[in-house]
Image 1 (cartoon, helix red, strand yellow):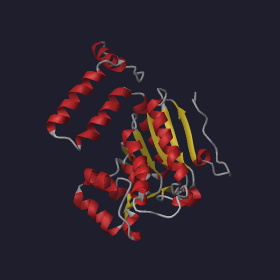
Image 2 (cartoon, helix red, strand yellow):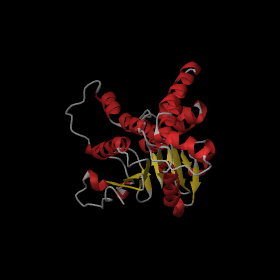
Image 3 (tube, one colour):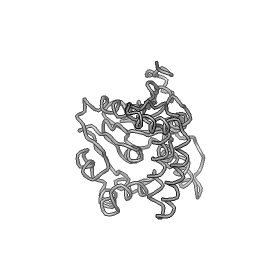
Image 4 (spheres, rainbow, N blue to C red):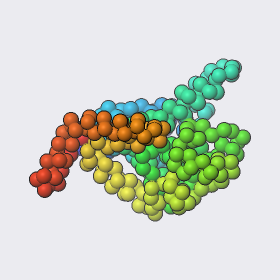
Length: 276
């Protein structure tokens, strides 16, 4: 049974209507819902997504997250028209806006204690591309494309792009994408390693549901600790990474699911994980 009913579109344009959300069968589904704007992300929408990711971390009923969108676009970037008015700009305003805005959004995905799947249904540009790349697994429709659009506007990439992309595809490929701002088709993104799988458009939702259900049926705490280990390893030396790995295993062995996994192996049966 759903623990929260899925919202429906609302002409008032409230954050709840522009971000659809439902949790069922252990999967929290977060859907950007401004198709007429290619899901360009407003300030209110961003705050709603951050809050929903935090809720998923804390909610035992949520054991995996799917982040997707309606219409032809996954997310066309940031729409700053809905940002709170701050008066005349002073030195430090832009950096503060980035820290408290785009960077908080990307950090919310990276720090979510549940695995997050991006189901990229269309164009992902700017912060929209970085939102997808921050996810743990990325599924893309064949028609999807990714654009490091910042250079087209004379801007520096933000939203963690210069942190994420070199770790995924190396500095040379990253510079090519960011210096030229060319559109990257889904298949090419898959070849580079930015996308896990490309599927026909009509199969994207079903594939995302299937992957999310596999994660939701798995050992939730072990997956969360694994996510933390892998993310932290990119900034760690070997000694630090090995120490973190040993401690994660120590912590994990206190969980119900670890004991269930070992018992099911000994008893030669399928484990029944509870996310505990």
